[in-house]
Structures are given as structure tokens and as C-alpha cells.
Image (cartoon, rainbow, N blue to C red; front, top):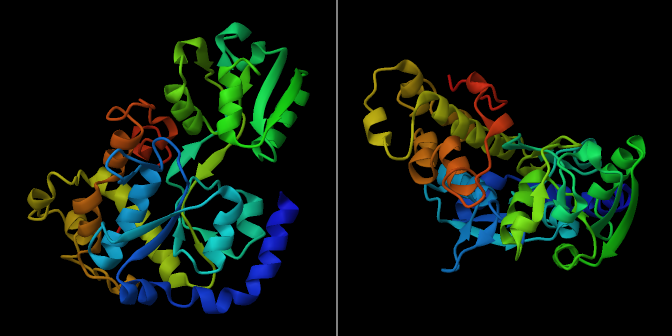
Length: 336
């Protein structure tokens, strides 16, 4: 996998200077944001019954469009498989990747890309068949694992099982969908993926009560949007859009109270709305860019709740994704 990434980089770096350019100007001239997303990950990127894209990744795209274009609806989504996502970004086919991309040393250093930050802290976990009769990972002694061929998570799994002296057999499938079907038909007893993804798989199983999502995680999987190197203005826009989502939650600014908060006398709130300080000057955006983000998309807590938390079928606890003041890792530099 690492070699494949390096080869892709060598082929595409020659086109980078023309592809990256000044993305903000290109997006504004075009009047629409081109966003690369995953073909379907519950809670992050799916199409609803009305044909509308929904999910945490989708809301990041919408937030960037709201900040740059003043309209969160001005997004064209390009569903991309993992092996074509970075190619699409580097070639200029998309302006941003927001597709459950994991920030690792390899992904950050082997390609001419920047991760604009972390919007979801995750880790690789285990979904096991009830018949395996375990309640935690340490109890696994022998197991068959259904997995797509070439999945990077398999390397993490091999390391974990070797260290913990687990006798395991990898049952390969051509795709994740086939691996899930194999799990449901008792072709194996375990699936191992980022835990947020396992939540979605669990709720889509024919008989979820016959499966158990174990509490442990065996890796650090930080997710975030990705942009091309060489365009610091665009990088800063995407990064500060994410900061604004978190900062708004900390300040108590929500999509349903934004009119009330705009007349607040608090200086930190006034700066958020661009009524004090430099506004959007540093990013080349309108002074009310952050207000557009929250007014049209919501703050980070709203995004989490409706896509992953209590307002969704997944019912994922925020855990590390709580604000720093609540014991989590979500933290934003101040807008001042």
C-alpha cells in the first residue's frame, strides 16, 4: 500500500502546480465546491431516500461551501473509492477530500497533500459474532476474520494478534460488502475496521443481536479533510472552518440561536461574527463567513448529534470527540 501511494505521488506531482493554483478563486469563479466523499459510510457519507447526501463528511463539505460561497448547498459530491481518492485530489478533479481519510505519517508525507485538521477521533475496533463467546478483545484466542483484500487495517490486526498470541485466519473478500456478507453468513467470526464504521455495519446487519461490538480500540485513527499542498490560503480556509465549528459550540452559538447571539455584547462572540477584529480579511472571505457556517450547517455538537450521536440511529457516544472542557480532545484556537 505504501509503495502504491508513492507511485501515485510520482505520477501526479508533475501536474500539481497547475492543479492546485488558487483554489479559493477557482471555487468562487465556478460557484460550486467539488468535494470528494466516500461512496457510502453510515453517519459520514450516504445518500438518503430523497437522493440527498447526508453525514459528517458531507457537512464538512457544506460548511466549506457556506464559508466560501455563502451557500452550503453549492456542493457537487464525487464518490471516490479509497484507491482513487488522492489521485482525484492531486489531479484537480476535486477541491477537497472529506471521506473518512485517516491522518497517518504515510498519508501525510508520501503525497503532496495536507490534512487540514482532525474532526473525528477514532480507532480500529472489533465486531464479533456472538458465537465467539467473548466480551473483550483479550478473550480472543482463535478466530477467523473476514476482510477485503489489501485493507490497511489488516496490518494493524496482524500486529495486534501477533503481540497477543492469537491464532487467527484471514478470510479474503474482493470488497467490504462481500466481507460483511461473509460475516453474516458465518464465513468468519470477526470484522475489524475503524469503530465508527463498525457502528454503521452493526446497525445494517440482518440480525445485529447476533453480533457484539467490543469496547477496545487497537489504533489511533484521526479523521480529517484533505487538501493539496501549495495553496496555503485554501488550507487555512478549510482548517478555520473546522475550528469555527468547534469554537461555535464552545461559545454556545447554534444554528437555532444565531440571531439572538449576533446581538451579544461578548467580545469573543462579536469576533466570531466578524463584528470586531479583522473578520474574514485574513482568509479572503466575507466578514460573516463563520456565521454562514453555523447558521447553515450548525456547530460541531450539532453535526455530531444528528449524524452520529443521539439524533442518529448509530447512537455513538462522543468520547474523545467532546470539547476539551468536557474531557475530550476537541479544541479550537480563538478567533481574534
